[in-house]
Length: 178
Image (cartoon, rainbow, N blue to C red; front, side, top):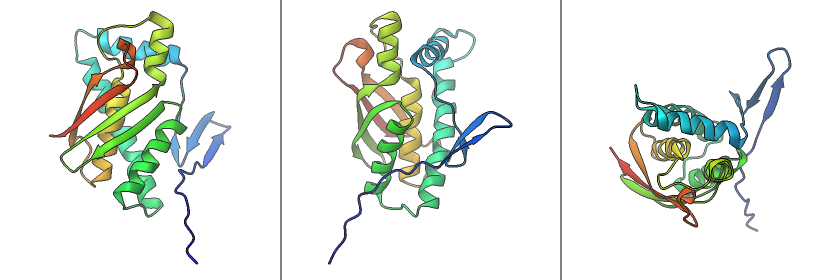
């Protein structure tokens, strides 16, 4: 008899009472409300002395790359399909929204968001706007693709082509290898 086990992202949560820190699968983890998330997106977008958007994308990419790589290694996940499933589940488990990898290749891919903590929070706080604001998800997707194909962090560029914050039903991202 064949047993089919559904792949499920597993969360190991610990709270360090002494230092008041949450750890998820060994990494310090902080979840923020939409007010905080939209404020740091706005700060990145408004920055004039440096490229705040690129800084937010890059730092997010580095953090999530480490988390995903370690999770794949610790759980023996080497199959692309399984890595995608875990990544989609992890994004949701973090409270960031509903992310779906539509296509994933070593040189390019496509991702959609049907729910977005950042976009929906922005709309509630300030209303719609023309330009995308989901720099955090751009970094997350770049990290995911680098980890899918065992490439170094920073191997992919992600462009948000369509955005919930601009009134679209879903956000669409294009992934290109650098």
